[in-house]
Length: 164
Image: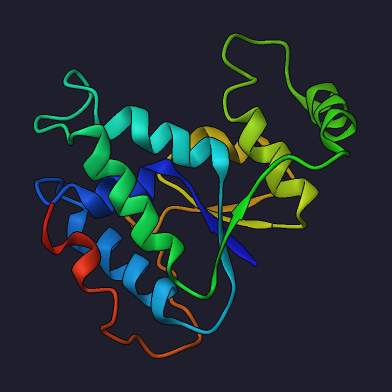
């Protein structure tokens, strides 16, 4: 299963972002395809924080509109929201032990731990910091690392980004 993070979601919802078309297209393909894909809850929370903050985006969304975007994604039959499992503490222990002793090394730790708990090995993200987690294959489809799903795109979720 493939996962994506807040960076992809934020670009998909922000029609003023230079990467909007690529992010929105990717999200539409995933949402309409038969293959399962995932978003970890910390990425949802990070997305909500990012797109509603006036210092992070030029045109912040109202929290209700940002949550409506997430709710719409949840209607995709192939999307899974991933939460911590009972193994969370043990997985965090393992990941922390592998991190370098440098400032900011634990950024993304909660998301990475949840992805590992659920067996996710591939992450689509514009956050290069997620590459520090060796078990993850991280690709940035917004900046030159293409990705395409096996299924042909449909149009059911085109409305995801149309109103924002």
